[in-house]
Length: 271
Image 1 (cartoon, rainbow, N blue to C red):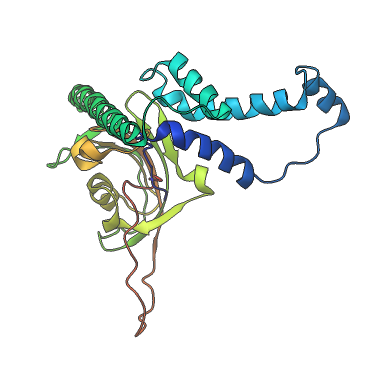
Image 2: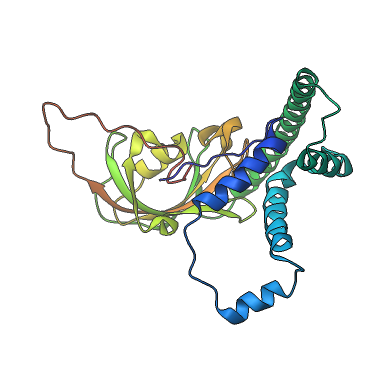
């Protein structure tokens, strides 16, 4: 299982972009030497080696600043960068720069919160509409909690308890069909304590016998709710195609053995 991490920018993004770009070069694994013909083709696009390297750094900095490009005046950004590289004294004192930095942070965070709130509202409405229509679909069953599921294949093995550790294959998608995770993306079946994942999975997988394949339709309240990470988003209704491969035997008791920690939610989703 993996954990989705939602990247956010702060008011220090402009300065951080420079150091991030520099660090990315230092940490990047050494690449195989390019063929002479490839080197010549690249060099032909620039007047000098410094121009080539300058283009590289500029591209990396631009990539790191792309998420805030609509929040800053690009001409002012370029002017400040040029002045800084020339050693020109900034027009703002360190104290004034800090004040502007705090102002930018507050404005950026407020905008991000407003955008996420709007996204949460839309996702909730879209999810509710989807589930209302989906429950009338032939073969779809709805539990008391609001979880919907569809039996694709019924297995013949035992059913797990919430305290069991299970092995599953899965594909997770949003209601628009966008895939956000799959066990195959991580090398094969995922193994995790069933009581350590989102409620929709804890409930849904307990309905399955080993060998079964179900499609779970998980309302946002049984998934991540407002805390939906990264590509999932807040208040998103999720769909999982789940195959229960097996139930893992309990670990042997040991005097100093530590209790396994719950994996990150949701089922098999990298967070």
